[in-house]
Image 1 (cartoon, rainbow, N blue to C red):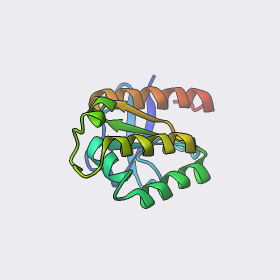
Image 2: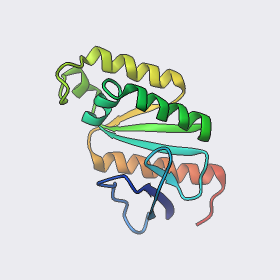
Image 3: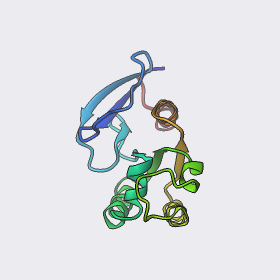
Image 4: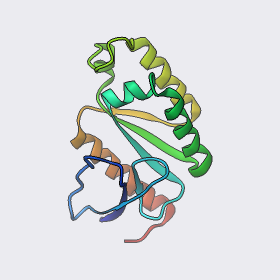
Length: 145
């Protein structure tokens, strides 16, 4: 089943989706990085582990506004982090001053806001899960190819 995926123009190295599974377009998305084409009710926010740890600490106010905007404007979203919880626990990220306990606390806050945060070990598995989520979303809202 091929789905149509919009990718934000600010996404520097977009996930790869095989041609038979997805057709992608680059568009400006006010919130998030990926969405089903034309879907105004759900987005995926993609973060590398380093970007995520910086977003929940140094850039928290900006990230919190974005998450609040996702909920207020779209209603639903998910954060996909390219990294593992074990890497957080082991402090394998580039913010030595940000303790794993703090990252976990902020992750819990995001989840309690109503936005799931999921962790996958690399961009390939992250893209695969993003495709599965968007495919399921297309079936939920009745988007036809």
